[in-house]
Length: 267
Image 1 (cartoon, rainbow, N blue to C red):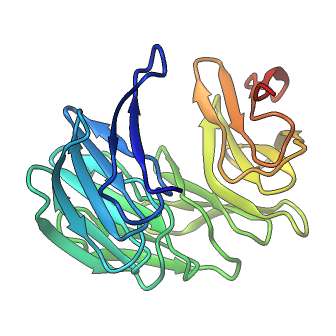
Image 2 (tube, helix red, strand yellow; image 1 turned 90 degrees about the horizontal axis):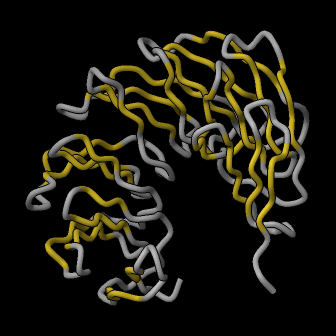
């Protein structure tokens, strides 16, 4: 939040370089692609740096960037709070196309093997976009507020809303497959995680909820004493959950939702 982007040695934590050219806060993490670092900033710029932190190019949008860029070969897809999704040439930062999605974009899109992009907006819509030209192919509007990135698995999108509803819809046309309600005042946030035929939703104040992929069974739940703003990260046979406002920074679970270990910050 002090406008610095810093490169550290992964083995020792020693600072290698720092980039001070941005004017805003760093909200989203950078992405490294080959020898290029792509770093979105709150000052509305996507910065492209080399591995020594030297700027190679920048791409300017009209409002803050909160989402990580998505890279598909030679194209960068950058979501912006200015309501637009941008396609950018990774080699030189040149705009290929941009599409107004109608609402602010907090999370990046996801992409399938056919080059279709899927994303949610703060206008409470989920939509499909052709990655070659930015054309919106279908869009669904929902009553609950969406602060989410859909998860894509075998042609199905999974996501939730701040009213406690979780959804499964067809990626082909947006048709609903199933829906469940997790309860009143259960805000579903971030992106679900899919592992071992289960879809796991993070809720802001009520921990994790796991369902079967067909929505027919609630598999397990895991309560935390802090708040969650994204789903767990799957690593080998573990689910690692990051929390805020809790006495532990991280908790690791097995695929059945049982705690394996906790990590607390040193005092």
